[in-house]
Structures are given as C-alpha cells and as structure tokens.
Amino acid sequence: MAPNDIDLSRPSAARVYDYYLGGAHNFAVDRKMAQQAIAMWPDLPLIMQANRAFLRRAVRHCVSAGVRQFLDLGSGIPTAGNVHEVARAAAADARVVYVDIDPVAVAHSRSILGDDRQTTVVHADLRHPDQLLTRPEVTSLLDWNQPVAVMMVAVLHFVPDDDNPAKTITDYRNALAPGSFLVMSHATHEGRPQQADEHQDLYRRTPTPMTMRSRAEVTAFFDGFDLVDPGVVYLPLWRPESPDEVDEHPERFTGLAAVGRKP
Image (cartoon, rainbow, N blue to C red; front, side, top):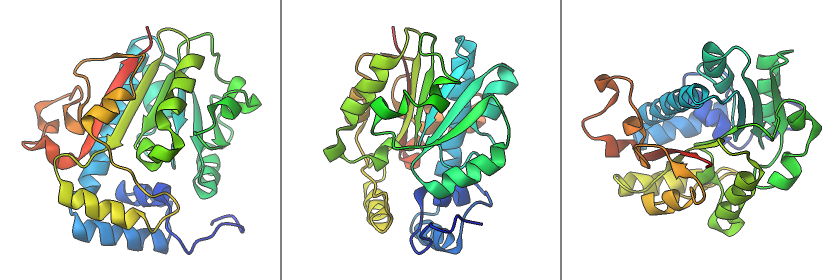
C-alpha cells in the first residue's frame, strides 16, 4: 500500500525500475509506463539487470578495498541484490544509508528493512549534500573520517544540467576521506541514439525527466577521483565476472559505468 498523500496518477522512476527488475513494489501506472517503454525498446529489462549486476560487482570491489560504509543515493526500492545484502555477504559489519526523493520508495524501503540496525533509509534530495550529510540518521551510521562508497547508480541522469550535478559531486567528494569511492552508472545516448531519444521523451511524463550524457561528460564527473580500471565503459564491460556477462554488442546497453577512488 502507498502512503495516503502519494499521487499515484503519475509513474515513478524508482517503481518503474523495480518493475524492470521483477520486483513487486510498483503500481498500475508504473507498469503501464514500463510496458510502453519495453514495447519501444525490448532490451530495457536486460539493461536494468545489467545495471544491477554492475552495482553488485562495484560493491564487492569496494568491500575488497576495505570499505565498510555505503551511501546509496537515489537508491529506489532495495529489492533482491541490493547494496546491504551484497556488502554484508562479503563483510558482515558493512553499514548502508539508503537515500531517495520518492516517498513511496522510502516507505517501501523502510518496510523491507524493518529494524535492521546496520541500515537506514532517508527521505532526502541528493542535490543538497550539505543538508543530507549532517542529518543524525546519516551520521549515526557513517563515520566521515573513514572511507565511504558513494553510490550514484542510475540516478544522476535524473539530475538536469541546470542543477549543476558536477558541483553536487564535488561537494560529496570534499566530504569524503581518502580511500573513499564514487560508484556511478549513467544512461547515455551513445550506441543507440534513436532509442535513447524515445526513452527520454517517455520519461518527460514523470516527475523525473531524464538527461542522457556522453562518455566525456560522465568522465568529467570523476574530477578529483582516480578512475579504477577499466575506466568509463558500457555496463557489461566493467570488470565482468565471466565471459558470459559480456554481450557481443555492449553498446546496446546504452549505460556507462565507472568507479573512482579518492586519493
């Protein structure tokens, strides 16, 4: 059930994403939009699943580098394969703060996580790090004197250029201790420009229109970070765990992925 004050007449990006992943935390309006998108672009569920697979690989990389703290911005609904499950499978003491602007996603997240003391869910706008990073529910779990992995997975393309996403990332970077990571995936028009344009048109119907960006633009977001090999690449090409994960045409996934480390 959705909270009483939520407008369910418009689809939500978080709930549409949940539908693509096969989740149950979505409504008829979200399913209708997702089905329209899939009709135009049948690869969409595969793209979203590749994005989630990248998230899992990136989390495991951060844990292997010693990180035990994660700030997942634009986290959506933490269904199967989420950050805290993957991190704690590798390090039982990992702590995760989930952040989302969608109150329905936050409500569902709180229901799913229950009284898990190593996670919390914050209803906040990632575009205001000065407000977010000092909130008690954040500082009670995350120690900013120790490395933190900031996750911006499939979220920054919902921040328009007018909101200056580069400055937002700089503000997060300045708050991080050395050895912290920035994990990012981002929609791009490169590879499949016609489908990308149609997809952007569809998202203009939601409260969160999409801004796809080029590889050069995504690379620029990592200013001040050392890019982890292989750099900014299509989703399946970021450290695949088996050859089966690499599609013959990785450009068809139209999503870029990268991880950077703060020196």
